[in-house]
Image (tube, rainbow, N blue to C red):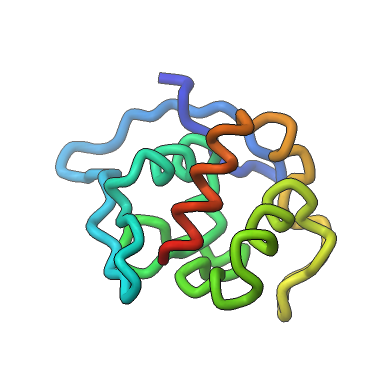
Length: 126
């Protein structure tokens, strides 16, 4: 418990990871046209740990948020460099239809560098 995060009043807070009986938070496989990793990839655990799945959707996974853009095709927007910048400097480029300052600007500081790299690789492979 306490290893999960949820959004409250626009801020991520620690939360209990317990779920109701019969409910699972385990993702399903993510289909990929280019052989990229699915939601069984350890990077998907990082997406859950840091609350990304509460705001973003990834088709074929348990990530179903609507606060931020769907990440299923994020690689087509500008590749790995775009994805990296979107994580560490989310206001550098604002996705159409979404306001500035909606994503916490400190993910580049609180997510370990190796995990950011893994996220970039995961999202680039979708």
